[in-house]
Image 1 (spheres, helix red, strand yellow):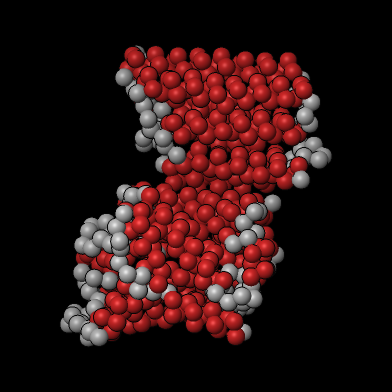
Image 2: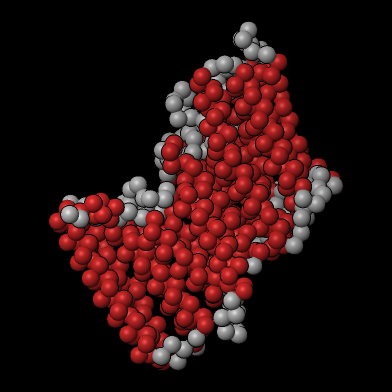
Length: 298
Length: 213
């Protein structure tokens, strides 16, 4: 329990490090120096000192959006085990709650975006929901395949026993990585560095937020990146490594940072997809998860 | 241990089918069909043991399926100047979803059909069935004559895998005859596709329907 609490607090404290790591890897590939590793913390401090500006056209939903979004990710993080360890809260089939907590956060972000009445944000909201509808089945099918393979139903034991040498887990890992890139608005799906471009998804929804609200939104999205990276690290970390190093603290952190490195490499190597091709890639993730599931059911 | 190897080969075969359903680039599609040939060569080897006859058959099969056919098809693609199968009858994302259904169906069928020999991984029959379904689907759902030709090859790959699973030792003469048939078929199809492109500047089979008259 204490290790789980420690992991949870580590995640809360270190999540803003991930965008820094990814930016550093990308800078390395591009031969630039890149922003400081702690840039996200600086941004957070800057935003927290500012007060929000609210349009008179918006209602309480606009103000509630960032809070609910961030809170639901924190709740989801409490369910997520760091590779091969226990989670703060766990019970059979807790991954369903995890998926729905993530969906709840997304729902309120989308509502807040629609509440502004801006057509631009409406477009972003529409895209976000469209892609989420394709990504969520892949996540659930993948976790179900792992549940079937390991014969357990709660996330910690499911991730703790998943062996990447089994074809199912490798397939689920690939599927989850694709969905991770989509859910966290990373490059083949969305470029987190572009602003005011017609193809952006996540950033388009938060254009009217500022100050503390924006800080909450950013912090929530970094936590979400941490959560997904921890899930993926749990699937892909070899069982031997999990059992040997489980007692050592910060193992989860290494796994998460390794995933962040992977994201940075992927972002440096490929360009963003055309918007129309995005559903195709998500369908690929769904197909991989489904193959893993069918192989497991056999 | 051997069973684990066959299992992994079959998982790769299933994945190559899924990739075939989701890819539009002709070069990649041809390469995947060749990869399937290599995987089936591995299956034949591990299914019938490493006798010199089996090694010879696998080597011949591999060189025809994995090297000769891709070379012929690539040459045709290059001469016809096509790179992608754009606008297929069934879109690529939908193809993938249909593929999942086909995989489920072949798993269910494979579990009911008592065809697999004892001692062979129970994944071989479903994987072979899925490969056959994929081949037929490619022939039906794609527009370009060359992709349909690849679909025919994939179908044949599935049949071959099916044979390896249910019979094991295929007689040498039958195997060589089948390969020769295939070779002639691919050669003729290649020539036909080339002629179609030379004559009509495209290889869209849909538009060939309107030629009667």
